[in-house]
Length: 198
Image 1 (tube, helix red, strand yellow):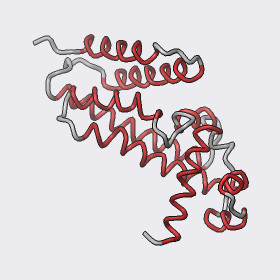
Image 2 (image 1 turned 45 degrees about the vertical axis):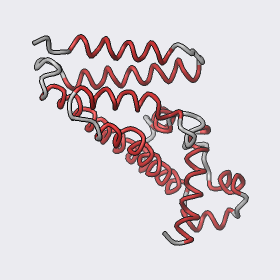
Image 3 (image 1 turned 180 degrees about the horizontal axis):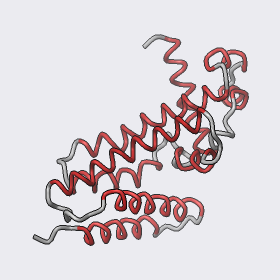
Image 4 (image 1 turned 45 degrees about the horizontal axis):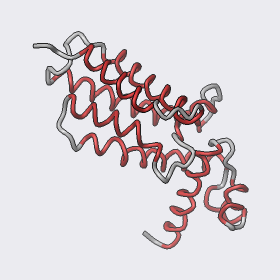
């Protein structure tokens, strides 16, 4: 990696941190330049537009998510073990030092859900990709006969997603210290309802 790429990587790491706190819309080339002590024109030369900066931040955020959630899950054996690992890592990934403001995608989703454009399109693509992977993990648990054959994969994935969204609300806004414990219990209850009892 050359010096220019090193600099851009450092810039994007800071941008991801800022976006996790301020939201993607609150992140501008000007505010990022101020935070880094760099010239606005220098940063503009690297990204050319606010939209390009936002998309780059989502790209880096996606790689962070893969490293913290997807890859650890893929290292476990297919089936219920992989699904449980994915849930645990998803639950804890927003507490990494790279995301001082919490889940980048959660805040971005509320900002861009009703705003058509290239940023929303990119954000939707990243979330559909994770949804597809999570569906594969649930299907894998059905294939190993650890989940009942009648388990509705789409419904279960939506329920898991709902648990994560609820956790972030209770944990970050309400500062409820028991929210993680309850969320884990709710996930375990969900699994038990669908486990194969053969």
